[in-house]
Length: 203
Image 1 (cartoon, rainbow, N blue to C red):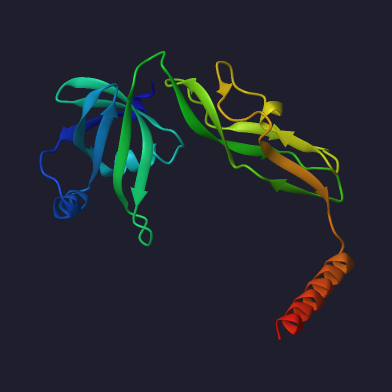
Image 2 (cartoon, rainbow, N blue to C red):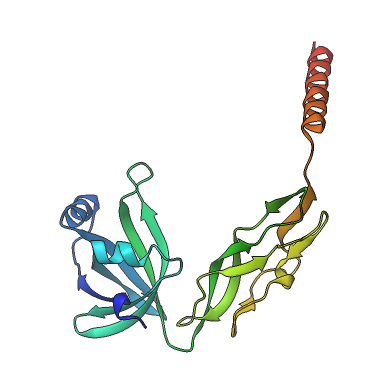
């Protein structure tokens, strides 16, 4: 565990939107810790430090609560849709050696063959990994891939200790030939004619 992920949390016994607003105004973030058959523990996290940590997907926190240490995986971050202020965080208790299912970002590397376009069908892939060894991302090398190439979950090179938690046939990336401007114009014209004919039929 990185020292940067060590967070001291404060227990909280007050709830409600008003109290949550006061916490956020004081630079803290309301959170709840649950899992492993334990009762949910409501805490307040240091706002700035926590915001920096959770910029990374599937962040793992080493929480200190009343002198006791807990490993916690960030499961859900609720933000204000307009202001993007962190309103609440759900934390899942984990133990070393335990495996969890998490969505890992898929990152494309390289460029497909000239004259082709890349369609990324899945931006994340669900993997089963050790809670204390969660990869930051999975890379897909698309360099030189030709028209018609499909990359499925089964084709992914997974980090050591990781296993797929989705159908191996799940499409990740598809490579297709780029259409020319003329083809685009023809397709648009065909669509316009079809729309006009549909309108006439309705009349």
